[in-house]
Length: 188
Image 1 (tube, helix red, strand yellow):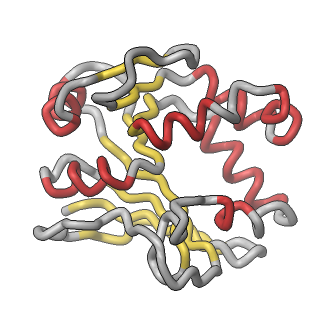
Image 2 (image 1 turned 30 degrees about the vertical axis):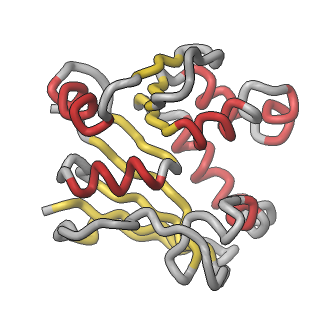
Protein backbone atom coordinates (compact mmCIF):
# COMPACT_ATOMS: atom_id res chain seq x y z
CA UNK A 1 0.00 0.00 0.00
CA UNK A 2 1.26 3.45 -0.90
CA UNK A 3 1.92 5.96 1.87
CA UNK A 4 0.53 9.48 1.91
CA UNK A 5 2.96 12.03 3.33
CA UNK A 6 2.25 15.69 4.06
CA UNK A 7 5.26 17.99 3.61
CA UNK A 8 4.78 21.60 4.66
CA UNK A 9 6.62 24.49 6.25
CA UNK A 10 4.98 26.01 9.31
CA UNK A 11 5.73 29.02 11.46
CA UNK A 12 6.75 28.71 15.09
CA UNK A 13 3.16 29.53 16.00
CA UNK A 14 1.78 26.78 13.76
CA UNK A 15 0.63 28.55 10.59
CA UNK A 16 1.43 27.34 7.07
CA UNK A 17 0.17 30.56 5.46
CA UNK A 18 0.20 34.08 6.83
CA UNK A 19 -2.90 36.24 7.33
CA UNK A 20 -2.87 37.12 3.59
CA UNK A 21 -2.70 33.41 2.63
CA UNK A 22 0.91 33.83 1.46
CA UNK A 23 3.92 31.54 2.05
CA UNK A 24 6.82 33.82 1.07
CA UNK A 25 7.72 34.24 4.75
CA UNK A 26 8.82 30.56 4.78
CA UNK A 27 11.53 31.13 2.16
CA UNK A 28 13.12 34.32 3.45
CA UNK A 29 15.50 32.64 5.91
CA UNK A 30 16.47 29.61 3.86
CA UNK A 31 18.86 31.19 1.39
CA UNK A 32 22.02 31.32 3.52
CA UNK A 33 22.13 27.68 4.65
CA UNK A 34 23.74 25.33 2.15
CA UNK A 35 22.88 22.30 4.31
CA UNK A 36 19.18 23.23 4.21
CA UNK A 37 19.32 23.89 0.47
CA UNK A 38 20.87 20.43 -0.02
CA UNK A 39 18.09 18.89 2.11
CA UNK A 40 15.44 20.55 -0.09
CA UNK A 41 17.21 19.49 -3.30
CA UNK A 42 17.54 15.89 -2.05
CA UNK A 43 13.80 15.79 -1.31
CA UNK A 44 13.08 16.89 -4.86
CA UNK A 45 15.20 14.04 -6.24
CA UNK A 46 13.05 11.42 -4.57
CA UNK A 47 10.42 9.36 -6.30
CA UNK A 48 6.93 10.37 -5.32
CA UNK A 49 3.64 11.47 -6.77
CA UNK A 50 2.88 15.05 -5.75
CA UNK A 51 -0.64 16.01 -4.69
CA UNK A 52 -2.01 19.56 -4.65
CA UNK A 53 -5.22 21.46 -4.23
CA UNK A 54 -6.04 24.12 -6.79
CA UNK A 55 -4.53 27.07 -4.91
CA UNK A 56 -1.22 25.31 -4.27
CA UNK A 57 -1.14 23.98 -7.84
CA UNK A 58 -1.62 27.47 -9.28
CA UNK A 59 1.19 28.82 -7.10
CA UNK A 60 3.55 25.93 -7.98
CA UNK A 61 2.86 25.98 -11.74
CA UNK A 62 3.46 29.74 -11.82
CA UNK A 63 7.06 29.20 -10.70
CA UNK A 64 8.57 25.70 -11.08
CA UNK A 65 8.33 25.28 -14.86
CA UNK A 66 9.92 28.70 -15.48
CA UNK A 67 13.49 29.68 -16.38
CA UNK A 68 13.65 31.64 -13.10
CA UNK A 69 13.08 28.42 -11.14
CA UNK A 70 15.76 26.59 -13.13
CA UNK A 71 18.19 29.38 -12.34
CA UNK A 72 17.26 29.74 -8.65
CA UNK A 73 16.97 26.05 -7.73
CA UNK A 74 17.77 23.78 -10.69
CA UNK A 75 17.64 20.47 -8.78
CA UNK A 76 14.32 21.29 -7.15
CA UNK A 77 12.84 22.61 -10.41
CA UNK A 78 13.91 19.48 -12.28
CA UNK A 79 12.33 17.25 -9.64
CA UNK A 80 9.13 19.24 -9.41
CA UNK A 81 8.70 19.21 -13.17
CA UNK A 82 9.43 15.52 -13.75
CA UNK A 83 7.46 14.02 -10.85
CA UNK A 84 3.89 12.88 -11.53
CA UNK A 85 1.38 15.30 -10.07
CA UNK A 86 -2.32 15.20 -9.17
CA UNK A 87 -4.44 18.31 -8.70
CA UNK A 88 -7.73 18.09 -6.83
CA UNK A 89 -10.09 20.79 -8.09
CA UNK A 90 -13.75 21.11 -8.88
CA UNK A 91 -13.25 24.51 -10.58
CA UNK A 92 -10.33 23.86 -12.95
CA UNK A 93 -11.13 22.47 -16.40
CA UNK A 94 -7.55 21.61 -17.36
CA UNK A 95 -3.99 21.59 -16.06
CA UNK A 96 -0.97 22.67 -18.07
CA UNK A 97 2.02 21.43 -16.08
CA UNK A 98 3.78 18.37 -17.51
CA UNK A 99 2.99 15.02 -15.87
CA UNK A 100 -0.10 16.46 -14.16
CA UNK A 101 -3.52 14.88 -13.86
CA UNK A 102 -6.69 16.73 -12.83
CA UNK A 103 -9.05 14.95 -10.43
CA UNK A 104 -12.47 16.51 -9.92
CA UNK A 105 -13.84 13.88 -7.52
CA UNK A 106 -13.90 13.82 -3.74
CA UNK A 107 -10.25 13.99 -2.56
CA UNK A 108 -10.79 11.52 0.31
CA UNK A 109 -12.39 8.89 -1.93
CA UNK A 110 -9.77 9.42 -4.66
CA UNK A 111 -6.83 9.20 -2.25
CA UNK A 112 -8.25 6.03 -0.70
CA UNK A 113 -8.28 4.47 -4.19
CA UNK A 114 -4.81 5.82 -5.02
CA UNK A 115 -3.32 4.38 -1.81
CA UNK A 116 -4.51 0.90 -2.85
CA UNK A 117 -2.89 1.17 -6.31
CA UNK A 118 0.68 0.32 -7.18
CA UNK A 119 3.04 3.25 -7.46
CA UNK A 120 5.34 5.53 -5.51
CA UNK A 121 4.41 7.13 -2.22
CA UNK A 122 2.39 10.33 -2.46
CA UNK A 123 3.41 13.71 -1.05
CA UNK A 124 0.80 16.37 -0.37
CA UNK A 125 2.24 19.89 -0.30
CA UNK A 126 0.48 23.05 0.86
CA UNK A 127 -3.20 22.40 0.29
CA UNK A 128 -4.39 23.03 3.86
CA UNK A 129 -8.05 22.33 3.14
CA UNK A 130 -7.16 18.93 1.69
CA UNK A 131 -4.70 18.17 4.51
CA UNK A 132 -7.48 18.86 6.99
CA UNK A 133 -9.97 16.72 5.06
CA UNK A 134 -7.58 13.78 4.66
CA UNK A 135 -6.55 14.03 8.33
CA UNK A 136 -10.23 13.71 9.31
CA UNK A 137 -10.50 10.60 7.11
CA UNK A 138 -7.30 9.11 8.64
CA UNK A 139 -5.64 8.81 5.23
CA UNK A 140 -2.34 10.54 6.06
CA UNK A 141 0.48 8.23 7.12
CA UNK A 142 3.16 10.79 7.89
CA UNK A 143 3.49 14.51 8.54
CA UNK A 144 6.84 16.05 7.57
CA UNK A 145 7.06 19.60 8.86
CA UNK A 146 9.76 22.22 8.61
CA UNK A 147 9.32 24.64 11.49
CA UNK A 148 10.53 28.06 10.36
CA UNK A 149 11.67 30.39 13.19
CA UNK A 150 9.09 33.05 12.39
CA UNK A 151 6.06 34.18 14.38
CA UNK A 152 3.17 35.22 12.14
CA UNK A 153 0.50 36.00 14.73
CA UNK A 154 -2.26 34.97 12.33
CA UNK A 155 -2.81 32.77 9.32
CA UNK A 156 -4.11 29.29 8.51
CA UNK A 157 -3.16 26.01 10.06
CA UNK A 158 -3.25 22.73 8.16
CA UNK A 159 -5.69 21.39 10.70
CA UNK A 160 -8.57 23.88 10.58
CA UNK A 161 -11.74 22.00 11.46
CA UNK A 162 -10.05 18.74 12.48
CA UNK A 163 -12.09 17.28 15.31
CA UNK A 164 -10.54 13.82 15.63
CA UNK A 165 -6.81 14.50 15.92
CA UNK A 166 -4.48 11.68 14.86
CA UNK A 167 -2.13 10.01 17.30
CA UNK A 168 1.44 10.80 16.24
CA UNK A 169 4.88 9.35 16.88
CA UNK A 170 8.06 11.39 16.24
CA UNK A 171 10.25 9.32 13.91
CA UNK A 172 12.89 11.82 12.79
CA UNK A 173 14.12 15.34 13.46
CA UNK A 174 16.90 17.53 12.18
CA UNK A 175 18.06 21.06 13.02
CA UNK A 176 19.61 23.40 10.45
CA UNK A 177 21.96 26.38 10.88
CA UNK A 178 19.31 28.80 9.64
CA UNK A 179 17.11 27.84 12.62
CA UNK A 180 14.73 25.62 10.66
CA UNK A 181 13.79 22.33 12.30
CA UNK A 182 12.57 19.30 10.36
CA UNK A 183 10.10 17.08 12.23
CA UNK A 184 8.67 13.83 10.94
CA UNK A 185 5.64 12.27 12.62
CA UNK A 186 4.09 8.93 11.70
CA UNK A 187 0.45 8.31 12.48
CA UNK A 188 -0.15 5.41 14.86
